[in-house]
Amino acid sequence: MKLVSFRRGEALQPGALVDGHVADLSAAAASLLDIISSNHEQNWLDQAVRKAPRLPIGSAQLVAPIPLPRRNIFCIGKNYAAHAREFQQSGFDATSSGQDVPTAPVVFTKAPSSVIGPEAAILANLDPTNSVDYEGELGVVIGRGGRGISRTDAMDHVFGYTIINDVTARTLQHKHKQWFLGKSIDSFCPMGPTLVTADEIPDPTRLKLETRVNGELRQNAVVSDLIFDIPTLIETISRGMTLMPGDIIATGTPEGVGIGFTPPKYLNSGDTVAITIDPIGTLTNAVH
Image (cartoon, rainbow, N blue to C red; front, side, top):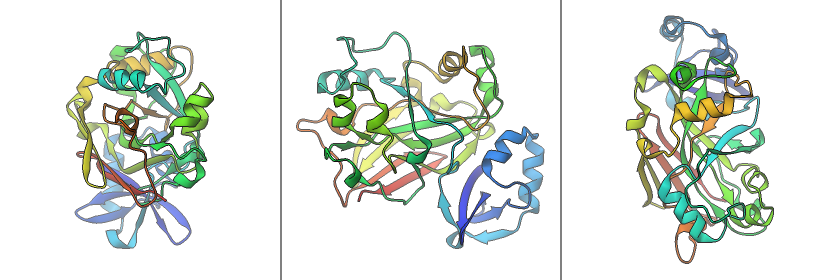
């Protein structure tokens, strides 16, 4: 099922995409976070969608599926081998000790206030260093929380999948020798356009990711190329920390980011970034 959050007037409401319409789920739950946290059976959600009134999709402004995450977004750095090498060779990885491919997951976070939805503007003008870069990623949304989750059980804790653009101010990332400030600028976490439930993506390793900037294909990879797969990421993060329903894990970006080019191809006002992962859809954002 393709779940969405949408705006009608001033209200944010949960919904589902059905036959070119939005099924308004606001009578069943206040938000997608509430649906994720409720731990209802799948048939409850199916019934709620069947009973929900339908709206023309043009009358509902889609926002990020989880527009106000309860916690920081968990992000994984250097999780595709080719990208790990291009990042190391770019000279922007101030945390590296000369190691191309990490031997354990590199985990950092982005502030919830950085989240925006599809078609919203990436505010590159908030980066004083003019070094804004894109990173297309598969986002994993946790359903059932827990601590000490094993690899074997990890996929049972996944509610669904979305698309994340881990937008980064590269010079800030390098200057501060950590990644939080350069990645948490307002509008630097586009998300969406949908949240597809895990039952519709039984094998996420088969998903294909493509990122285009102004129509030019920049990133093209399959999720099976991850160095550390989704079960490993969930096991690693939850080892001593409780994962909660609605937590989001951005699994890492493949080769083809702006700093991988000589000279770097940073984003500028007027550019458009479009990241596609089917069946989730295409996350498109203009740069201002």
